[in-house]
Length: 263
Image 1: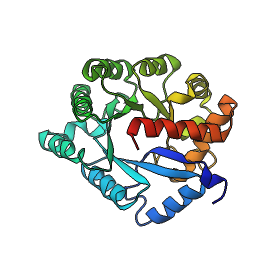
Image 2: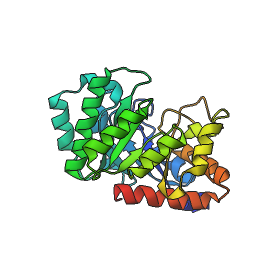
Image 3: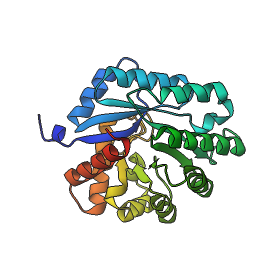
Image 4: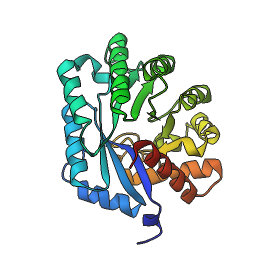
């Protein structure tokens, strides 16, 4: 095992159950291991209910993969009681470690905002009832998301704000609610100076790293399909911004993920 494989990084948010990856899973896992990534969280809820079942099936087939169940706010308008009941049932699966992704997206507004708010509240309650942590998607909806987490979570729900891109004031709000912040390849982009300033201020013990594969591919691979091996570039950027070693970032972020998701 080389030095890279000893890093023990975790890609805390990837959608590798999608058609973009086809039959490449073994190669993706191999490249991840070679880059020092030892676990991958396969996140459900992107597009259709079936993405959750596909995430679970993948996780159940591989010891280094774990799954989550939820529905993206883009699709909130298409989620009814039957879908919610099915997702509630899926939370009982042994490889399911979190509820999500779920949340609010007021940037694209693919679903009406009131429907997004209602569904997000339902998922927060699901997390509270099952004791599972929450994976939150939030874009241009910080105040509403924080209010719902505060009111529906009753201080009992913990989780992570995935793909965090806000300012430090919003970061501090989520940190005060007991949430972790997860950073993606966006922090490697040339124009992401303000976000790197946030990275500099957020405590390492409250950070995750993720790819959000197949999206948000970091420099130097920007423009290609993303994959879990590339989470290393996110960790390297955090190390550079904070003036610490890559190994320290890997140890801390992996400890954080394992603590929240109990893996």
